[in-house]
Length: 619
Image (cartoon, rainbow, N blue to C red; front, top):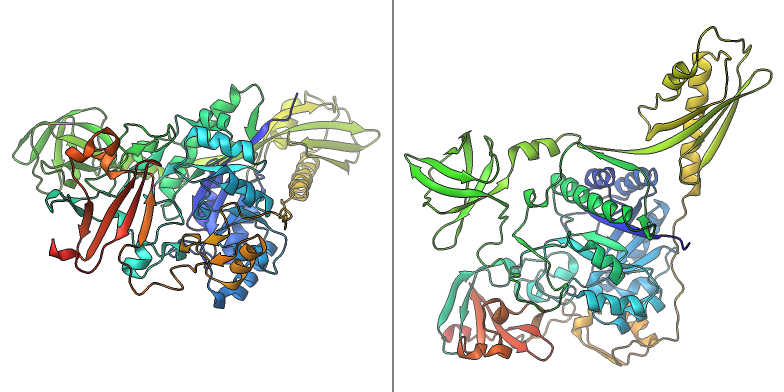
């Protein structure tokens, strides 16, 4: 029978404490930012803190990946080299990178993962990244199941795909809106979130057809019901987005996906198994709708569909639906509730003009709700809970344990030696032999007494699953049993640590050519001489520099986003379906001093967002 495929649940961590909780709640791996160059400027961590995460992760064979996925300026190359060396010595398993300069640096043989910022849209690009030395490829969020299958056929390395969390409207690595319009580069971890702003939409005649809507703001991804299909398509690493999320969010979402994946593994006839070890025991019932979300979408997993994927009325958390307003009298809300509410819950609803209004409950009395302040609600208004006080309080406390079940065998070697064998069920076995002095016959049955002593594993990661007691009727002192137990646990810790092997960087094939031709535009984000040299050595002859290093004097007409999301389709005005008669182009978006033109590539079902010129206000 073939070996099962090891499947990874990969969790985000803004800091060491969140990383440890992610592992405790079931993650097989975590990704975390270092002091710099991590594509989330607000989520940096010292190497010492990352080393602490590594130490904890090793206890459960979990992995630690560090994001070094910004583009790198020339003056920073040596600094990055030094950082990578420190991360390698700290035990980090792999780096998630965007800049090809890493492949030309003098660094240790640490494994490299191709970040989603590498914008790997085609199987040919995926094959190239594998051939030049990447050990894992993070796929674009926009791929369908069929496109993932094509990627799987092209490469042998693991494929990593997002399954949950916030969505960027642009292909990752190919969004330049923040850099061009605000001087804050998303490729440098400083995204100004241009996509979450409210916009006015103007048609070709200059009419404002949508006012103050978040037309580029997408819902949050939720593929929890599609995991088995994604496994079958070839995904082996399931990634949760959210390196800026709080610990409660990470606990809840990781626990939910851990449970779902384990259910799939249980019915897979041994085809799949977990990458890490340890049984997770939860002190709460995970529920995705209780954590921050803008409403959910499966995104493009089924290709183009009629599903609404934007959150055009608000970029804030909508939460879970909990009921409908029946009446409002004297500031007291009567509601038909779908779920019990509690004092301190945070509720939200949409006003008649589709603005999200939030309020907190002072008191709940059955169906009667007493808000903390004045709210303007009408009968029929749908209520959402975006802060569940009881649930949040549970997550604020220790809410999970992770345990490795062990088996023990106790026996005696004449005349006076005690032997304890301990196995973790995953291939690690240790044996302790100790002189026990005089082993006289016992006056009573000894099994339960010995089990009580040997099962005292509190303060360790282990729990006794089975004891085979072959010591017979000999009396073994409690102190002797406790001593062999402590020694065996220490040895097992050491054996598990020694057994762990980090994956090293794959060799680079120098003969492969970059698959997209000999010319690179600014979309490839080449910002330094080492990245330039890498591409030149793989057949590229013309390289346009990254916008961050050479912003054009005139940006009018510059494409700053390329999206699979189509605003026309979202508004029911797809050009393939006669939408120009309902919404005549060209279309443009305005928000304050920002003006963007929309160009539609219907053949490839793509939308290009372009900067308009300085005369945009003439409309």
